[in-house]
Length: 85
Image (tube, rainbow, N blue to C red; front, side, top):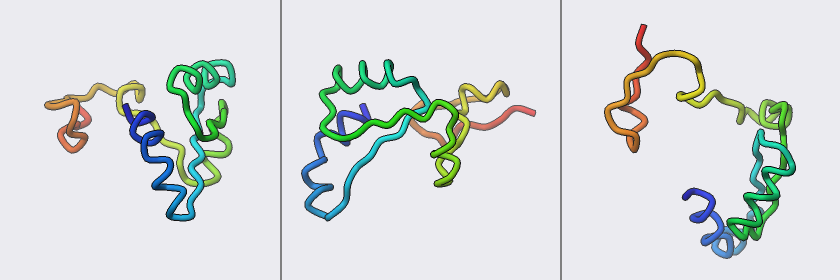
């Protein structure tokens, strides 16, 4: 969903003088598959160790993969997700 929105707005992003570069912790093969499936018109970089993401302060743990139990009232509203102690 987000990739579709970014791809659809790539021209507007370019008009602002910006270059969109996507970064993913997935493998090159996985990213190539996604890029082809979504017909991405921008670069999708593979960063399996999150080295580059960490360097730019972009590394984070997704709430569903943190290993901690969470309570989620609405999957669309991140603010309603709370960690259960």
